[in-house]
Length: 101
Image (cartoon, rainbow, N blue to C red; front, side, top):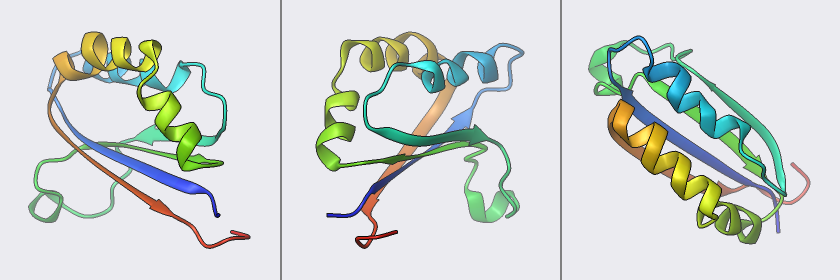
């Protein structure tokens, strides 16, 4: 089984604290996470991005480790207390890379 790539896109609210609050998710402890990057480095303009203006991708050793992280109390609390109050929607997508990538 290959690594799992997890991508989340958000519609970040236009407030001074929104970015720093959403970025708290990056600092959560996570066994099995190889990479985690966040930002608004999208290349495509607003029409194609449908208002999603902030993103994160992370790479995981296995889908089991991603699932364990997703249901962890730290992740749930951070999502409920920092991410959701500062966003107007989200979209998540996961896929498995071929073995060896």
